[in-house]
Length: 159
Image 1 (spheres, rainbow, N blue to C red):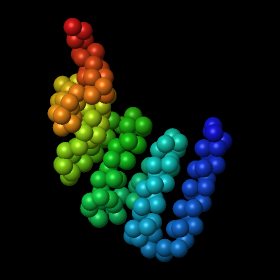
Image 2: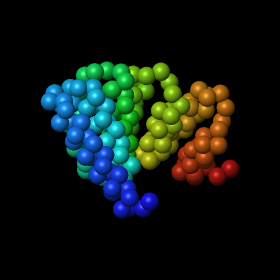
Image 3: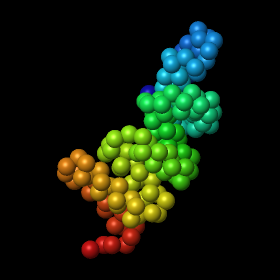
Image 4: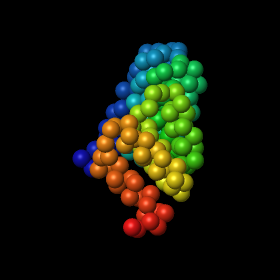
């Protein structure tokens, strides 16, 4: 493994994407290219190639958003991840709030909203989302206890 192996994998993904792209002159209007582009952007995210991911998301935005579900939600979730890695949590929160409006309640979305609001130091709002995730699941899981503990730590509630 290591960095060299990761870079080799990224380069292979880029080459595969370029080859696929050459087969579809309509570009991101083709669902195959759009799906492959979303996959490549996640490869960039996981390897902290944030500028490349940002460029790719910008190129795909209009197609993802105009297609509706599931394209728009996948796009917004992944873009929110990028925004967090870029230390742009306010933008990530807006994207995740929009995901929450467009989809049925899901514990991952609720926890992600709690996490981003914790990062924004909006701890009461974070607690609300973490508690909503627990309620949705039907129990308080270890992850929920950890997240709620972080809220209390930031609020300096040590009781």
